[in-house]
Length: 84
Image 1 (cartoon, one colour):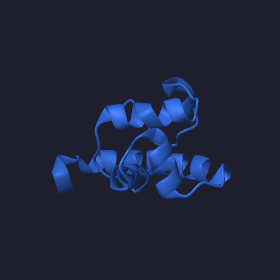
Image 2 (cartoon, rainbow, N blue to C red):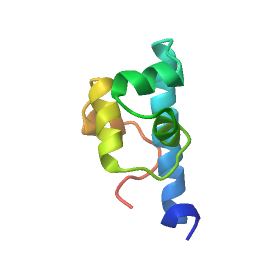
Image 3 (spheres, rainbow, N blue to C red):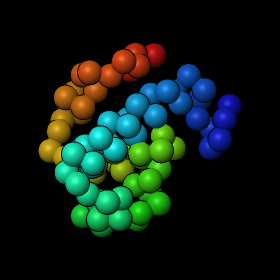
């Protein structure tokens, strides 16, 4: 297993989650610092999301709430198979 016990087959999914969040942040013309602050997260915690790092699922839920998107909406267009 890789860093922080992430299974290698999940790393592409984590990167896709991060890219999706980064695209949403940039579409809103927000910095990482401002976005993290508005979500009530530390900057480094939010950076883990965007960089495909290992994080707590509640952190992802905070981001989805902030962007006003449901879990199913968020994952509907992913190229990575989320069922594996």
